[in-house]
Length: 142
Image 1 (spheres, rainbow, N blue to C red):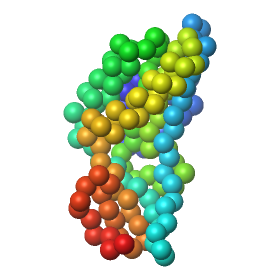
Image 2 (image 1 turned 90 degrees about the vertical axis):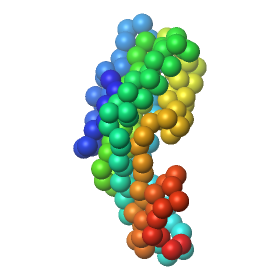
Image 3 (image 1 turned 120 degrees about the vertical axis):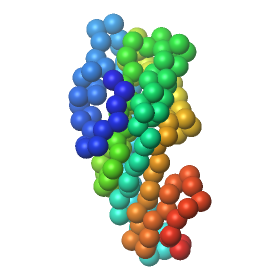
């Protein structure tokens, strides 16, 4: 399951899709929006945008990388686009493997590769402006 979705992510469905009788571990990473503070300003919410045709392919590519490198039986990556409020999941990764070590390592690899190769951009909307994370463009003064 490799998806980019526009609404809330059903974390339970991602976990259920990873369940396998031949696997003793399912590692689940849930990236959520947090409220950062800087002086008097704070993050109100995040907005994600993606170049969908390429982002979909890159998520699948990460899944293939993982299956070549570790003995895993299932990989799911679901990333959200649009507005994500504090506490809500923006990305969910579930990796099922016979052993926990492989599941942990593969899950960590997936989130790092998402940040490296998937064309998804994050805008932090603060109480005093906004900033694109990973970009030099923004209107926030702080």
